Image 1 (cartoon, rainbow, N blue to C red):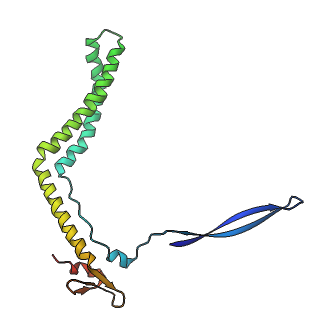
Image 2 (cartoon, one colour):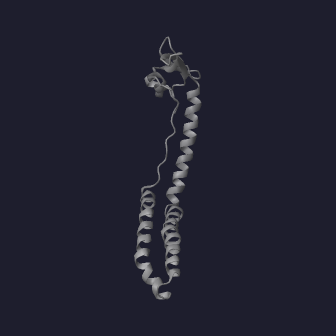
Image 3 (cartoon, rainbow, N blue to C red):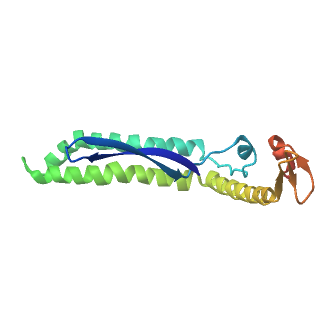
Length: 179
C-alpha cells in the first residue's frame, strides 16, 4: 500500500464578495504492486507452452487471406454468374450474391479448410502436442510442489529446501529442484 497526497482547493466568499482560496491536503492510500529483485528470483516456476506445429500455423494464417480472396472474387465474378440465371435488373440476384458470398464462400470454406487441416492433416502432430502438454503440466505441478517446500532465510540470504536440507543462493534456486 502506498499513500498519495492530493490537494483539493475550496473557495469561500465573504460578505463583500471577495474570494478566499484554501487548499486542503488529502491523503489517500492506494494499492501498489511492485516486485523486488529478490521476489523475481524466488517466484514460482512457470509453465512452458507447447506451440502449434508450423504447418498448422501457416494454414491458420492463410485462411483469412483465402476468405478475403474468395469474397472479392465472388463480388467481381459472382454478379456475372447470377445475371445469367435471373432476369436483368433483378435485385434478387444482388441479394443472393451477398448471401452466398458473405456466408458460404468467405466464411464456410476457410473455416472448413482450417478444421480439416487441424483434424485430418495434423492428427499425429496434435496427438503429440497433447502428450507434450500433459507431460509439461505434470512436470510443472511437480516443480510447484517442490517450490512450496522452499524457505528463505534473510539472515543468511539463502534459500533452503525443507525436504532435503540443501541450500543455495536465491540466484541459484534452480539447483534445489529435484529432477
